[in-house]
Length: 259
Image (cartoon, rainbow, N blue to C red):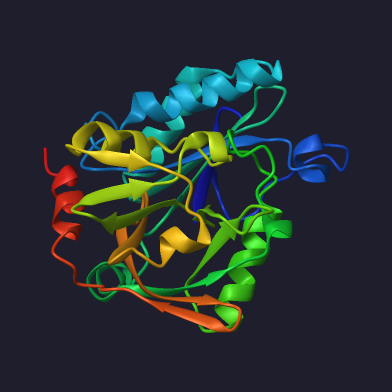
């Protein structure tokens, strides 16, 4: 294993941090995760979009800007061996780039769909407009989902409205169109979400109230690594929702990955 940290290429699977580092104590980092399609400059990789996301959060938090050349160098080095990269920036500008493989069952999930579990509002994300290292609530939601034999969790607000999955954006098919929760409900402004919004001919952004989710024929979640994952079953306390995992509408989403 190898990773890139603070301007250096490092072999190994351990990183050394000060015990007073706010990134360690508070999760005070910002990060982005990208999938490399052939190269960092491929349109679907969206290198600029991922860097812009980091830069926006750094500016909003008044953190020190990182060495962007170092970040690019680390990403280039790791992309030779890994299709997925996670780029992390600390408040003082240090960068950390790590790589990983795609999930071994990704194709099966994309084709057959998964089961998701609806989490309570206490497991909502911190600072949802930003991707920060404080990802404890979504992680706990996902761990609970997996104990219930589900593969993903759905986060909710105080009114029980569905917001997003623990790792991506929700999409529902209804009345011959795609529906997705709006940003004002407190969800991450995902890069793939923006790409799909600009690529699809018609998308309705509306709060996913409990009555609305019952009306969807098909639902899925998306992120930059997994692309489109249908959800065929949702576990919501004593209720189960069933959706069509092979609905033809999914092709409209998948076509957005051809350039």
